[in-house]
Length: 413
Image (cartoon, rainbow, N blue to C red):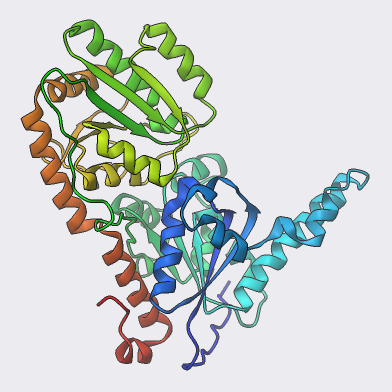
């Protein structure tokens, strides 16, 4: 199978980038929202196409504005018809499939680039452009579950149609780049695209701590297995038993299916007065919590269904803000956190090592400070969002409009 011919672009008009997404806007995918804003600031015309509308991302500063501009398959007349219960299930499924196909075809026909976040979305785009005479090239960003859980569920040949039709494959880590190559993705079309954080917006401001104050520990993430919240709680229960003299508090921000089991685990440890579930937090609330935190804890694991992290943005935010991190040797995390230099890492599910790391940092504020300084430097060097997005804009121009790349460098250079 060969990809359709790319479209000629009017050099006088801005390049049109279509973001193709499963759900929009998602609070857990702030990297998508931030990337949209950054590309628009560089002069691209950004369009948003998503299967489902989500309300969670409305907590993001630009979530509502972008939501009003997006096109959704589930708002198509055929999707609305599919909600009529008197229709046979086969007709409802057909109507939904056609609505989604039309959305993707419109995105491919009306844009100069289809930017798909997550492998399954790229795969859907590849199947859509088959048979189209002219369609936008497909670039797919791979994050985590799409190269772990999805492959475990559907097999390692899952993305073969995408590898044949796609133009560029953008894993967020070296680990996933190697995985794509092993799966048969053309190596010359693989380019790492880091996710990052705004180092200007997140000032380096380690929280003040004085002897006698509790050490405040923070975790932020969906309450799902791969985030490892269970092991955070179990490790701190060990600290409480082995070092009752240490004073600390642990706050967990986020919601998800494991909320009730985690509440029960906290009750079983008897640490309800020291461990709190905060519920979902907006990006602004996360920043406020980081300004008060002395440690950030995220012991990620491979979930039973195979789901894995990419490189968690929450770790980047903590490191940029001056909060020393404790995490695990999991997925691409060691590409961000160098053990004993810019943070401390433990083997997955090893609550004993986690407890030792936590106890040592609770006791040693000087060590916390040295880790925090090194962590900030690491994020500035390799995970600064503004630089990453500027370079990504340059990549897009170089690929789609080389003449314009030479004449009009991206804004911010």
